[in-house]
Image 1: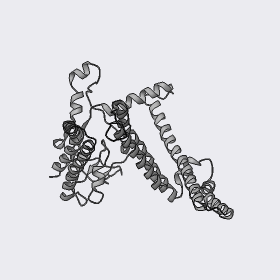
Image 2 (image 1 turned 180 degrees about the horizontal axis):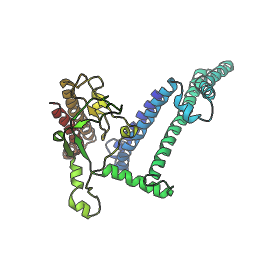
Image 3 (image 1 turned 90 degrees about the vertical axis):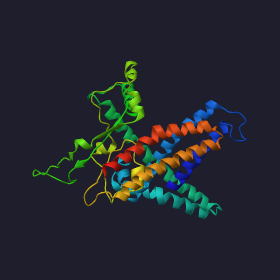
Image 4 (image 1 turned 135 degrees about the vertical axis):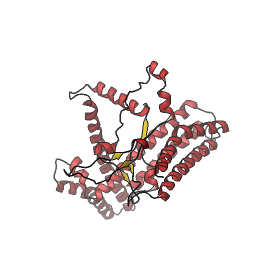
Length: 345
């Protein structure tokens, strides 16, 4: 089922790209350039990519949950029933109903018995996946709703107030300027004191390096505050990630290091790179991380430029867009990897 969903996602994205090229007049299907329709198709691409990626992530979790004995399904989907009920439902979905339809079509002497049995099996798994995905998304939305509603107090706010608060918090988190602090810390991961509590790391003040993106410096200009668009805080507020909420801190050691985990990490993710000790990152790993950050961004820029060139954009448009993407999106990530590389010397 996950393979079918992956192919469906690729086909859907392909249709959106083809519609974009047609509306831009880059093919013989469309003779005129429709700017508003083409802009709508272009702006819909991030939404499609994010939504389909979430669907694939849920599908992978669906397969893992099925293989591990339906632990999530037993807890959230069929929580009111016992585990025996869940196993019988899974048996009917994955095996019972498709096999029964196969037997019926064989006794009926139909020539397309294999087609009908396969479609029934596919539909059963699809329905079970939709129930699983709806339950997961429903519980996540319910938890986010409770956190947003009781962010400042414990009373139940009105529905419109909660929606407005969620929009404002999202805008503040996404468009507010950010600072990134990189520093060296000394200590052991599992070190504990005599009372048995975990010791905190000792940070070096001299190693603190605070960096801000050009966008953060721009929104911190005085006229932004005078116009009421942004407010510069006296003390920066910490941005919490999912790992902070779960109480986890990802450590990158010589054994857990990989190019994919470093390059594909979330934009605001924090991690602890071990630079000394038996599990410290090697020089080759640090150089590879920096080289992968540069090479990966170069490939993305070239791919974007090639796609725009294929759609017959003017050379100065392509060059201007490439420069903007490098300066505002790729340069901060490369500098972040480069600062960690310098601190390891």
